[in-house]
Amino acid sequence: MNPKQTAIQLLVGNIRLSLDEDEEKALESAKQKLQKIGVFASMRDLKVFKRSIDARNKEDVHFVVSVLATLPAASKLPGKQALDRIHAGILSCEDPVLSIGNAHMPGRPLVVGMGPAGLFAALLLAENGYAPILIDRGASVEERVRDTEKFFAEGILDPESNVQFGAGGAGTFSDGKLVTRIKDPLCRFVLDTFVRFGAPEEILLKAKPHVGTDLLRGVVSGMLDEIVRLGGEVRYHCRLDDFSECPDGSLKVKTSQGEFSSGALILAIGHSARDTYQRLLEKSFALEPKPISVGLRAEHLQSEIDESLYGSFAGHPKLGPAEYSLSDTRGERGVYTFCMCPGGEVVAAASEEGGLVVNGMSRHARAGKNANAAVAVSVSPNDIEPLDGNKILGAIAFQRSLERAAYQAGGGDYFAPAMTLGDFMAGRTGTQPSRVLPSYRDGKVRVADFTGIYPEFVLRGLRYGFASFGRQLKGYDDPDTVLTAAETRTSAPLRILRDPEGYHALGHASVYPCGEGAGYAGGITSAAVDGLRATLALMKKFAPSKGDKIP
Image 1: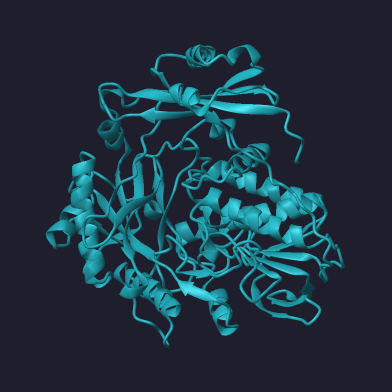
Image 2: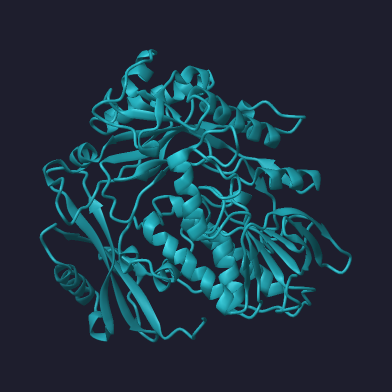
């Protein structure tokens, strides 16, 4: 996994390509640029690395391509000024750099949570002889699909197997977006791993890669099978209920399937494990509240989003469904779009009885009629009343209050409350969706008044946001836009404080919190990277210790 460097990878960017030109034109352009700075003669390989869409001018929509040039490791490169002239630089990618410790680990490592952080943590451990135990309170991919489809069709919720809990985490029922703002060199390793387990190779090229929920399910299953093949164990319907730290450094773990010992604990619990948060508070873990966002899902016709972003180029076969990302921080508080799903659907994402949560999902083809995205308003810890003197508990109570209010507004049977944007902006209710039809559970919505769901500051933020976004993207504030409540699970309400070098929780040397649920990531790729970083820290300290299998 850590071969000696045998090549330099030089990335040549800012290459313009029309929609009708093929990639050979981009490679030729890269060659010409490299010849200008005198390095083309030593080239070993040249290939397209990334491709993004530039639609700032709707009369001239085109691709912007970067090309990866591979040179021998001993190559002498020109200075930064020469590289800057051709928009080139050294590519920063790496595989996990392993350093195996020699400390005794008194038992096998336990990974809690099968989202991206937990999956990548367990896979890395299994590949290096640590024989991890991977548990999740939810079900396997196949069983989870059946459970969610039953919920979507009949409104029968399984609180332990749903859109939030189970193999793959919440991302399994999403668009499978792999876009991230972090610049960690492990990001490429994450994409390569997804391809290794069945994701399409195009995710390595696109500036905004996505897998789609239909393909992501197979990728998750493949990773879990590999963990088992390499000596790890995978247990579904196994909820972490409690744990205690023993004098010898081991942990006694209590789960819904019984008790066992572990040598180290990787907490990759996801942002909806509210009972685990409560347990950590009771154990006096160092936690701090962090900002969250709440809002709703907005649906438009995908064809109209395409036209707004691409103009006359809308529908071009090389473009695919258009995506947007909108934000405004000039008002009373920040408001932004989140998890935009082209050609997707709004999904029922509740994990607690009596609460209604929505999220977005797309399949790989993104062929649905509607586009949807969360429109979310920033909520700071200071906006929230503490519960029993604790702001973290207050934030969870705040989220629950919106979910329960949405549940009641929808009729108390997991029909979702919905409004047209025209009604929402005018402060009225009663208009039935017509031109844009809601996709939540195939239209199982009831028109309702959102003023009974959200506090006034959230309503103000949403109205401000739609007015702003209508100026940024033509048609976004169309009165026929359908709004569905409530989006509350955009991120964890807390951060589990940890040692910045060792990645273990402060005061708990064998507990490694990571991923989105620990407050250190936001999205599939960043959560996977954080899971890898925490696992590398564990491996740097402990040598493998297979121990006994759990009973």
